[in-house]
Image 1 (cartoon, rainbow, N blue to C red):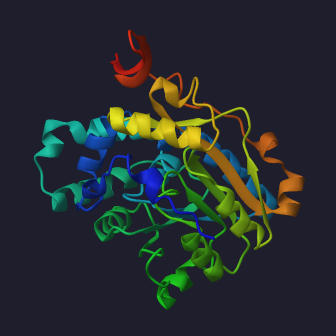
Image 2 (spheres, rainbow, N blue to C red):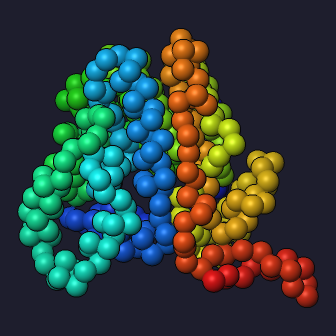
Amino acid sequence: MRTDFSRINRSKAIFDDIYALDDPRAYFTVLGGLDYMIPDVAEPVVRQILAAKASATGLKPVVLDVGCSYGINAAVHRFPLTFGGLRHRYARREMRAISSETLVRLDRHFYAAWPDVGLARFIGLDVSAPAISYATNVGLLEQGIVADLEQEPLWTDSAHILRSVDVVMSTGCIGYITEKTFSKILDATHKCPWIISFVLRMFPFESFASTFASRGLVTERLSGATFVQRRFRDAEEFEGCLASLAALGLDATGLESEGLFHADLMLSRPEADARAAPLQSIVTVASGRGRPIGPRYVHVEGAEGLQVALEP
């Protein structure tokens, strides 16, 4: 049975409009304003996993970024850049005043000017045609696929692109997509890819792990660490997340209760690969919990018990 995330998503902020534009300026403004940091805190871990994959095969892996949007994961992996630094670039008055066409041209030269320190080649999958167009036009992605695999089949030309994929990664799309999308991706691959999943703790992962297991992949969760995604947008999102976690029997104390979304890291791959190099042996982490952030929604003790407050 496929997971139904619709109930969990009811209180979660919707940002669809920032992905429908021809460039990422609104994306950086809106998500940056909520201290979005998962691309930065995930990147060192992704780098370690890709290094382990390359060591096992001797080849530079091809990565499919599922829900890639404007190619930000590729940008922070391939170049000595951060989400925070890019946010400040696009916040400049001069950058906000130019057309999307001009921005794309400037960004193509901007990224080309940096040394490529990446360990992989990137292709992307997203439902947003403008985001995919931007990411490929500025050179962040080698190829991009525009598709909603929850609702549509994977067309032949897109399936051909996926044949060479060595690693599938996602840093925030699970909860918006289900195992249905991953099944179509895995049907198209000619290899047995590793799957890197950063999953908000409020979204159960069991149905994904079961789907992967049916294809010969075992799933490990990194224990002892979680990864901050961003601050909650409002009190409704804060309380909705805590309610979802409680329904799963998960304790939010010291994590989401502090006003931040937290994600777990899951790595799914063939059993022989997991035995040869367990996840705990190849990954060291910095979770993002120590980063300076803006006001957070938290619970405080009041005259009538616990109340939601915006804490500076």
